[in-house]
Image 1 (cartoon, rainbow, N blue to C red):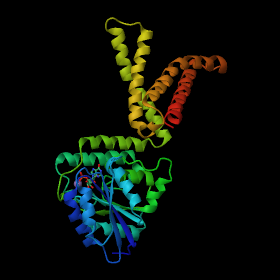
Image 2: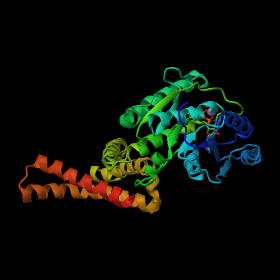
Image 3: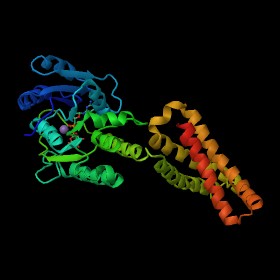
Image 4: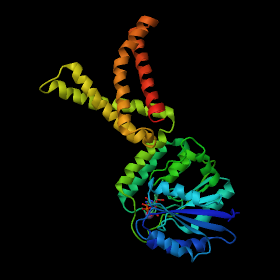
Length: 370
Ligand code: GDD
Ligand code: MN
């Protein structure tokens, strides 16, 4: 083993893992190399007696064991881990699960690899040569795991290109890399299980290395992953992907296009089926359905973290307001471009639509959700 830093913080997210704490700490204790100061921070959202068990066990070990219990589990696993970072101080942070599916013997190997290569991030991977996803029970979970890996890599080719296992929950990262994200506009906004995804995309670690490992069987208890976690993962991907305003504009446009579906469906209902409204009032009403659809998607996916500035009713009214203003403004604007600037109808209409779209986007992006 090459040179190790003097200190390592081990951050372990826990949700009802009382029966794993002793075994985990015992194996960590056996793995700590001579002369290294380790500290273990438990980022705990448990509803059972896990926190009490941690406090009791702490006295038995020669290194600091810090329970960080959160009464309000904001951001789930990832949120807990990020809070755990602040409770430690070592230059290297290792994140691992409590259930011993991640072998503690690898902790210091990850850090040593980082020191030897200069990498800021070292990931324990199940998918590189020498790795094994053995403990991932069942064909269904394997399929979910490999398709989420593919999706994440397709969405973030640059940030995740060097990783064979971006879904890993076992990795070492230098505190300097974590602190870099803290100074950015948005900081870290973890959501659910995939904390590595958050760090790899937002911290842009300089240098990435991997160490293969065999994903083991759970020591005690059961997995805490639920189908809701899958939905959270998709929301996490969208939030990360739309961190860039250009990407947000594209998504805004795509959501707008998708709004034609409810719009046209309602228009059909109102005009074709009895009693049959005339076109203009029917389309005005149908447009509201499209706007409602757009608002639901934009508000809950794209700007999930920017909702605090205004109440939901005001957000909906503003959104619908600019959406309807769009209809009213578009035609006079095109007419003005034709009459005033001498443009021909087609480019004038296209330019008018582009101006109105940009104005709508800016009001929503820069004002409504700041
Ligand atoms: N604080 C906190 N809050 N901890 C949580 C929460 C939560 O809401 N949910 C789960 N945990 C803790 C668990 O107690 C456990 O220590 C760890 O996070 C992982 O949870 P598991 O339920 O055991 O996850 P898994 O085995 O299905 O998947 C894990 O391993 C995979 C391979 O590395 C996760 O780490 C995956 O993200 C990872 O892909
Ligand atoms: Mn597990």
